[in-house]
Length: 161
Image (cartoon, rainbow, N blue to C red; front, side, top):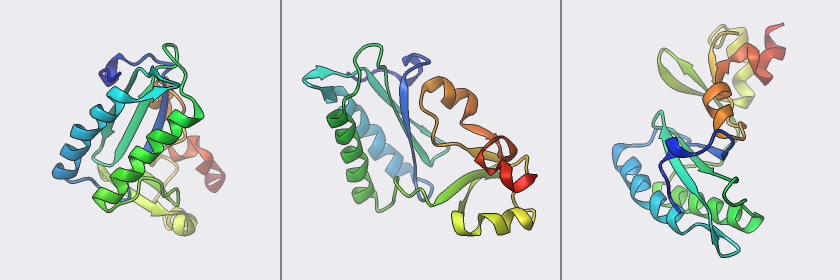
């Protein structure tokens, strides 16, 4: 059953999907039309999941499920991944590419490919204080508190010693 994102509990499980480019208004409208429909019918072993989604910064799709109500199973998680993959195909972009790290530079989302990350840090483009998205957060509370952090407080800290 689809619920507003703000009503998910702090411990609700979340998945962050980073788009390979900013979403257009038309693409966002498509997600806003299809995501509630998917989540309204999302279930595990025939039992409805209390779930929601939210778009952030025109580039991130976050899906959440309140597992205090009903735990997501492997099959239900697979169906959510299939939903995201269908969006990828329809929109002509990737939500699954983990080969880029997202930062906030000059109030905009900047994507740095992993192979050039060290060079960008050495050149000073990315500093220890550059805000970095940690897409591995696992629940809504972590999303709110630890999703966006200075690079020095993430796995990138090894580059700033």
